[in-house]
Length: 480
Picture 1 (cartoon, one colour):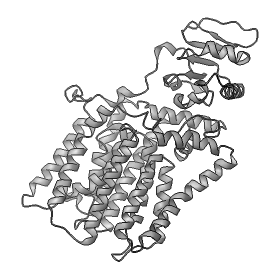
Picture 2 (picture 1 turned 180 degrees about the vertical axis):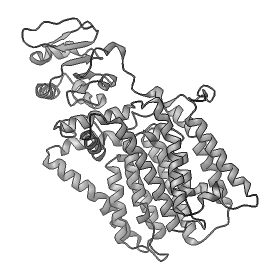
Picture 3 (picture 1 turned 60 degrees about the vertical axis):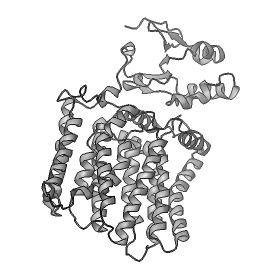
Picture 4 (picture 1 turned 135 degrees about the vertical axis):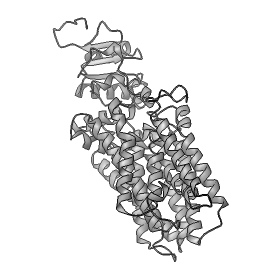
């Protein structure tokens, strides 16, 4: 199997794609669970298509390009979950093939072929977390696309014009998920390793990084939402307020990283025992070590639970694992190692089919999907607002107000003793009042006291904490 993928023939690529589909597609028979990050993106897409402006008409910290992508997908259909999953599969496949192409073209190791792409896509299938179209996965695609621009075109130095493109793509990645801006440090390290004039080259990299932010800032300036862009996106994400709130628990993430971590540790140890190669190959190895350090900083920025965190370590893991598959005196050892890796991935990914989730102490990722609350079963296709962090009622209903993220909504609901906060509440509700209001924080008495002309029209239903907006002369009826 290993020798088969060490060839660069096109048939190997077709077999690789077939293997990837065989790993991922059978799980579709069990359905597509809606994950919290996908629900958030769908709600964003709905509001953007309804004419809302990001940050000005939406209290959420999602990066602008990730939100724009959600709005574009909503144009295809109403909450197209299948399209989200299909696009995630396309992106992870592109990343694996693109990274494989960069390694082959740069002659990082003597052997070429599709082994790097095989390992990248195989380890990336160990969990369904990378089946999700998360902002981190989208942004990482731009990092992989711009990675080749960080490598010199010759062994003598850079073509400096390529550095602007590398910085530009890092900036675009950060516009999908802001903590990815940390990879600018990796770009600086690459400049120090490869560039002849490090200071000028780094200025080109920084200018390229700032250019997409200048374009986005100009757009929000004309949309009269530049201060909101800073307040709702830059500050909360940099402070770690909402980053990574939609991912799997840290304990489960760490357990799912056992197989990738073992492969990375073995490959890293094997690479350090190998005799040093060419100067360029040694520098590339150092660059991959730098990538690993930046990925650790990224994981810390996402508090270890950002959806798609595993994708950050796939490039260095893939590179260092190539040392495990090199020719050795016992030719059967690398073959056996690859077969063991395939078997381990199959067992972990299909642990529910083999009834091994309890044996392995690995809860299924689907347990953390959005589960509708039976208390609100009567709410279907309604425009609602949830006063609290529980987003489950939005699974079958639409968001009526700008208050999507409850933590950011505290700028208004957490300061009801201030006139500005009450004024913003009244303005936002007057433009798009929800039909139903779910009060999880017992705020309705104070809201009805301070804004009676708006919240006084909401009457309690038979379900505790649920209020319905009454038209003039209309009486409340019990909900079934």
